[in-house]
Image (cartoon, rainbow, N blue to C red; front, top):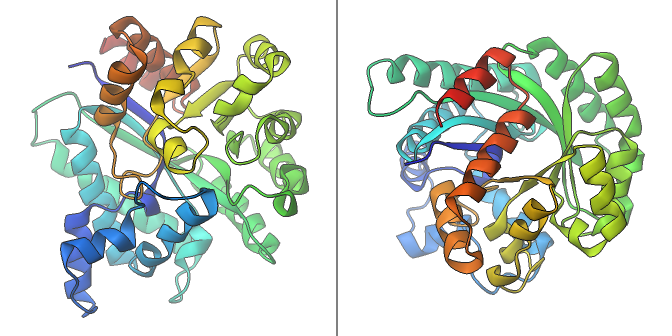
Length: 332
């Protein structure tokens, strides 16, 4: 089995079901049937758009407000990723969304890193496949009245840079109200701190949002799949070697595409776009990275050669050390 890399994976959209069940018991939350639980955590096939999709984050976030809970969730998730054959992951989350019970953003990030370190210690005893290494991206959020919290996230990213955190992101609802250019000061500050960043764009709002992201000198775009609607934009992305963090099932859920047969990942690869394939939200979309590859093999005739290129594109784009990139290249 080819090793796998996921550089676009949201922590709060990927809580393992078994972990959620544990936390429901611990916190004495009303017992639910599996069907009820899945309806709280995952979208159905008739999800209408990105806004409806984002509603599924409300319940898991209630379970992610203490250090112990965050540590457990990260540990359990990483065990799942290791089982799936992942060798590197960049997992993203917004520290400001985990402060509802009094944690500071710094404490949130430390708890997540502690969960990772606990997994790394456990992994030493598990030689079933190549080691999984993990870093984190801290998300600033497109929301009303949270500019101070976003500024704090950038400062916390500086504090943990290369100590578990390797970059920042801008996530949340893609709407004109929260247009990317309104967050320019955050990315200017990140640049001054030498913090790498990626920006969600080209999902709900199409090519124009991607142009705004590129104006902020990002090297990676979260999703970005709708560049296929603008040939000149594709040329720019190729020329500037911008990496797209594509997430097929998620884009299907949010009605960016009606069917996977139309997903343009092979076309973009043939045009020399630096495309990667990722899972986005494993639980919300009821997916994982092996499933993403399997679906695209079946629906778009994705080949082993294509998959190797997707892997190498992810290695190139990852915000990890050159030493780690050399390890990842040696695995294929």
